[in-house]
Each structure stands twice: as C-alpha cells, then as structure tokens.
Amino acid sequence: MSDDVAGKVALVTGSTSGIGLAIACRLARAGFQVAAHGLESAADAQEALDRIGAEGGPAPVYFHADLSRSEESHDLTKAVIDRFGRIDILVNNAGIQKVAAIDNFAQEDWDRIIAVSLDSAFQTIRTALPGMKKRGWGRIVNIASAHGLRASPFKSAYVATKHAVVGLTKTVALEVAEAGITCNAICPGYVWTPLVAAQVADQARVHGMSEEDVVRKVMLAPQPTRKFVQPEEVAELAHYLTQELARSITGAALSIDGGWTAK
Ligand code: NAD
Image 1 (cartoon, rainbow, N blue to C red):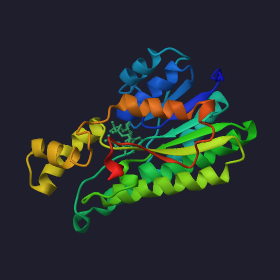
Image 2 (cartoon, rainbow, N blue to C red; image 1 turned 120 degrees about the vertical axis):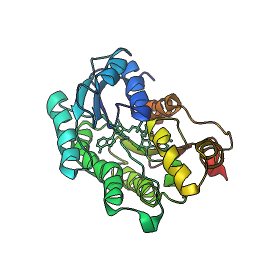
Image 3 (cartoon, helix red, strand yellow; image 1 turned 45 degrees about the horizontal axis):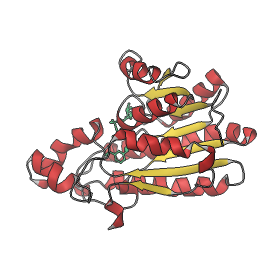
Image 4 (spheres, rainbow, N blue to C red; image 1 turned 30 degrees about the vertical axis):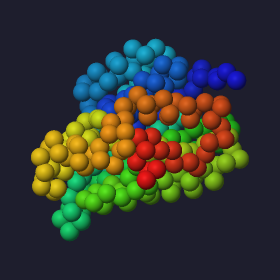
C-alpha cells in the first residue's frame, strides 16, 4: 500500500530541538509539509528549520507560540490551518521538566508543566480535529513518556501530566475511531536531548549524588539496555504511526524505553 503524502500537513510542536526536531526531520523526509514550532524566536529557530528543510519535501515553515498560555496553543493550530488549509498529522511533542520534592514544588512549575504538555494537547487536538473529520483522515501522536506509565520520585507534575496525556490519547482515540483518525501516545524512556541534559544537575542535587552517578544510577538504572534511546528511534515510530498500514493502531501507549516498563 503506498501512502499519499502529497499536500499533507504535519504540525510538530516543540520541533526546534531533541525528539520533536527528529520527528519533523523524519516527516519532511517522507514528503509531508512540516509546520515547525517552538518557543524560540524565528531567528533562533533558523538552524532547526534548516535541518528540517535539508531533508527534502516542501520547505518547512516556522510558527512561534508559548504553549504555557492556553490561547496560544489554540492560536498556533489555527495559524497553521489558516496558512495551509489543513492539518493532517498533529504531533504534540512540546514538554518541559522540573525535578523537586513535592513539598518543595513551586506552584508555577506545576502549572507550567501541565499547560505545556497537557492543556496544549487538549487545545491543539480540539482545534485540528474538525478538519481531520471532514477529510476522513488524520493522525494524532502525543509524545508522553515512560513516566506516563510508571512513576519516579521528584517528578510529580511531569508524571501526573504524562499519565494524563495517555488518558487523553485513549479518550480521543475512542471518540474518532470510526472517522479514519488514529490517536496514539509514544512513551519513550530516557532519550539524550537538551531536556535530559538540563535535569542532570537538578537530579544530582535532590538525590545528593554526583552528576555522573545520576546518569548511571538514576537515569539509566530503570532502562535494562543501559543505553539512552536516540531521538531518531522515536521519530521512526512516529513516522510509522502516520502510515496507512498503522491505521488499526489507535489508543495505544507505545513504549520505546529499552525494556523499562517490562519490569
Ligand atoms: P527538548 O528540551 O529537547 O525540546 C523541547 C521542545 O519544546 C523545544 O522545541 C522547545 O521550544 C519546546 N518548548 C518548551 N517549552 C515550550 C513552551 N512553553 N511553549 C512552546 N514550546 C515549548 O525536549 P525533548 O527531550 O526532545 O522532549 C520532547 C518531548 O518528549 C517532551 O514532551 C518530553 O516530555 C518527552 N520525553 C522526553 C524524554 C527524554 O528523555 N528526553 C523521555 C520521554 C518523553
């Protein structure tokens, strides 16, 4: 079965870095029109945009929005639809992390984590869905986490948010099951990206360990492979989910975690 990608538009939130950038590059290589997005200014996002553009396919277009603000999640989705007339593939990838004990967890960090990953997915999905329904085709991929299926200490907001993203994914999948639209969550273990690099120092502080021990004893300890997942591995799975042959995969929380959740 050959996939018809011509004219199809993919919005990938948080695609200036890490996993989102790898997904945007993979979808561009497949020939989709990529709508890239990030918190950065257009100038700061240029390097990422160049990498996506170098994959071939239609020239990617960059959209800036701060997804910690509910209205900007809606406005971003609408701006992409206004520009291209459609969104066929929606990848909710943007996410942030904060490591702190719950009795020391700042309210603003709690609110921001929930807004960027959960509220934004709610807003983008409900804005993109009517067009997908009208065309009878759509793919929604939410980047959750192994922390959407398992907990770790000192990550209350992140773990709660990612569990909720898995719940949202299942609910949307059921609501659109007969409309030619799938909705899935990808649940990666530790992937070496700026988000993970940035939390090594925080983890060292709360665990009272050296940064080297954090990588070995905290981050890679739950992953039986003892290796970081690479962003390109997650991108390949996301791309697979966009294909016709993946049409019966929906409502799933797909682990890509080196065996973490097998335990
Ligand atoms: P990253 O820090 O490399 O990239 C994060 C992206 O999100 C950037 O493009 C950034 O611009 C965007 N972003 C951050 N705050 C934003 C805001 N307020 N508004 C709009 N955009 C914002 O992160 P990553 O490691 O590639 O993570 C991507 C996703 O994968 C996240 O949802 C994360 O929770 C999830 N994830 C990551 C890992 C990992 O180990 N890296 C594991 C499991 C799940």
